[in-house]
Length: 111
Length: 115
Image 1 (cartoon, rainbow over the protein chains, first blue to last red):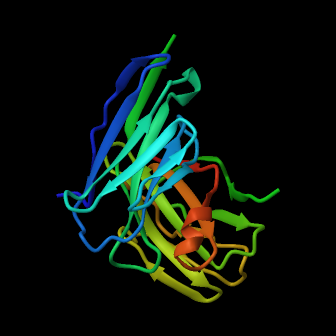
Image 2 (image 1 turned 120 degrees about the vertical axis):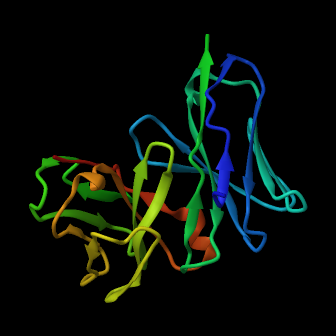
Image 3 (image 1 turned 45 degrees about the vertical axis):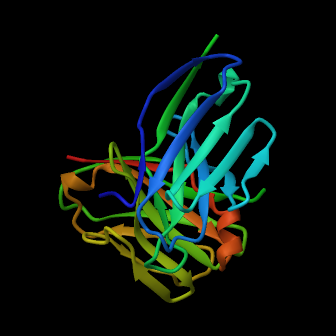
């Protein structure tokens, strides 16, 4: 079983839609979680950290459910520019500061 | 401008021909790491370094070497490349500590094809 698992998608949504991604992690000891955004053939960029209390940044909301070991990302009022691959990331339990990446969920926002 | 640079950005080579991919950061970060990204497998860590002369293996270190002689540079060396090392490679840097993970920067990537 992969340490971080995501639905690869793609999720096809119209502009203005609300879309949610889930991600599950297997290491119950993981302390830190992140969502990264990756545009086609570009480097990943940190979108937001995920806190136990939840985290909201504009149209983006991230939630952590430790009991069920999943992380979610909600995007409201989708824009064309939101089209990208979203990577779920957990801090691993081996290796200093080691990040474990999911394979990503692809989002396509259409006009 | 804070950045991580990688060179070359694209490389086609043949099996067995030694190559080096350079990585340099201008943010005085202690922590640097190399990842490879393959379809269906996501990013996997190859090697990481916590500071000058301190390096350690990640998940997929076989066939790779690294060095950290200066804080800003962290080259990735393929002594004898093989076709299964065809991949997209990213270098990343951040300050030490969990808070540093919130300011991790990635380089633009190096696309390597080994024939």
